[in-house]
Image (cartoon, rainbow, N blue to C red):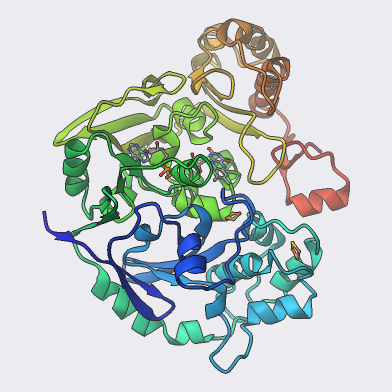
Length: 508
Ligand SMILES: Cc1cc2nc3c(=O)[nH]c(=O)nc-3n(C[C@H](O)[C@H](O)[C@H](O)COP(=O)(O)OP(=O)(O)OC[C@H]3O[C@@H](n4cnc5c(N)ncnc54)[C@H](O)[C@@H]3O)c2cc1C
Ligand code: FES
Ligand code: FES
């Protein structure tokens, strides 16, 4: 295996080549400490406030794709092969403000200014992605989504949203002008070597292929695998954890692949929430909505499906949905692979069926078939960027005679692991999908779960809501049921005075 000991990336258009890096030095600390670029701010250091938002460009199929991320929880060495843009890069060399900066000025989008660079970078990412053609304008929902990961304590959001709406006519900016050069430079940086850096006996390893990853994980079974670092970053910034060896998966293109297998989608472990949203959202609109509510854009651009499964969290949002759909997980150890039903991976709180030297390679998600009814619900205190108190995902299959032939009811937040409700499922089989069946299943949930009380929700609340969501699912999905759920933009719903349920749904 060929190793390269220099981390190479573009800061703006300038090549940076760094050696002997602290494996968990964050992008934010490097920018503010080593580079003295003080535009990028630290608010929370845990991915919540967006003050540290930067934009990272990386080559995908020969095209530079730009995405907003949180610099506070991203390790610098993971930027190998990328372009890093900070707020300092936006104005032209002659001092002319970038259109997103000018829009913020024109709309009075800033007061104390602490959050402003982060908002500007989120707006810049939106400008790049959405305002692609003259006259193009992102809708309110898209603007809300782009800004949901940025918090402001003093200006209020209306002027900032107004600034986003002002970006209708996208003009060519100086970053566009440099794009051909940047594309060539990034292509020249790409190679198949294992990138290695470190200091003080600690190591950072970034393989480029799945085989290299498999060899490295097998040879270093004690290493911490890092994908998007949206969990691991916080171990470092909040828990001051020292990680002796880090193996980063983000350079492995083969792990970020989504393959359509006809009756199923196979998602590599390195598929980000953003990429998964586009793919899984095509299977059912609730999956699109569920993924839209994982973290905020900065988190979704970094966090991966593999990380969401591998961390074994009882309140991760994708496992309940994938379990309800009947997904299977492929783990790899060296050259050996094994596949198991996803639900069997979660053994107990903090304990997963992963052997030493093994890693999560992919998850295969069956598509919905004839007679399948599906719904996914996320209940959290705050609509955006909040961890679930409860996540409920249901699949019920009806036979030609209208009777239930299959029930997969999966919950997060109800036990120490994401878990199916076996007794409730049994209460449904062989019956018509009606309110009586749903009520019986709701009653059976008490045999399935003894949820905990914590600051997100009490045990009684969790059990009540878990059952009520079953009733809601039945009411919404029973054959011939009138449409009760109208997905609306949150802003419109507020204007209409609707009582918005936690998933942005207005029951009209
Ligand atoms: C502000 C914020 C909001 C969030 N909101 C949500 C939310 O709404 N819903 C939600 O579900 N989560 C949320 N999270 C948590 C986090 O984004 C997810 O758990 C994410 O899926 C973790 O993926 P990652 O790629 O960042 O994993 P990492 O942080 O890189 O790793 C997480 C764990 O998985 C292991 N791991 C990673 N990849 C592999 C692999 N291929 N094989 C084996 N082990 C692996 C790591 O060693 C580590 O133990 C949030 C996080 C933040 C910071
Ligand atoms: S400092 Fe708050 S998200 Fe990074
Ligand atoms: S302008 Fe002060 S925090 Fe946003």
